[in-house]
Length: 159
Image 1 (tube, rainbow, N blue to C red):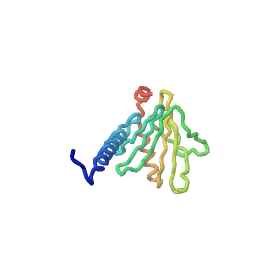
Image 2 (image 1 turned 180 degrees about the vertical axis):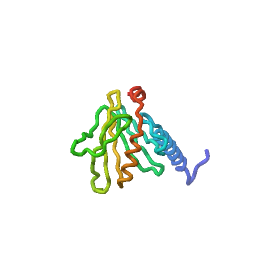
Image 3 (image 1 turned 60 degrees about the vertical axis):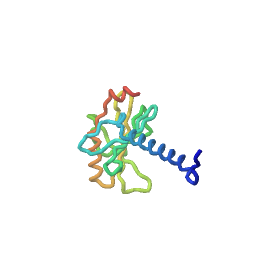
Image 4 (image 1 turned 135 degrees about the vertical axis):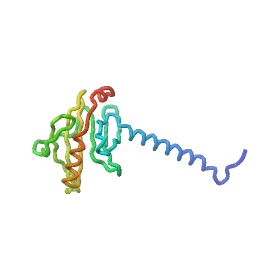
């Protein structure tokens, strides 16, 4: 049998490298799967990064540069509890009137944070959040969320 000599450990490393690349491709494919995320308006140029667990869905709307425009968490309960005193902008998402609520980001007082909850049917709630570095960016991202459409049949079929 031929000896591998100095490179006898190269084969296991190549197998490991191949496995890591295959896993990264699978993760990229999962990230591109919109899963139970709502439909994004084509005009936004955003794409979903999607992760699911047994009882919830996590969606991040990403810009072309990979930065997060906004995110949302779909489940039967949410840890976010809006306070009337934090109420900010009135808006509409998927035809439902709602309010955005001010939040804070520790160590970044110049960042404008907004969160909201909307009922999307099938006993599910969407907790939506966004961060903006300027009033113009805040207005832009709120406008993008107004175009979201939650397919209730898709949400109820998977859960």
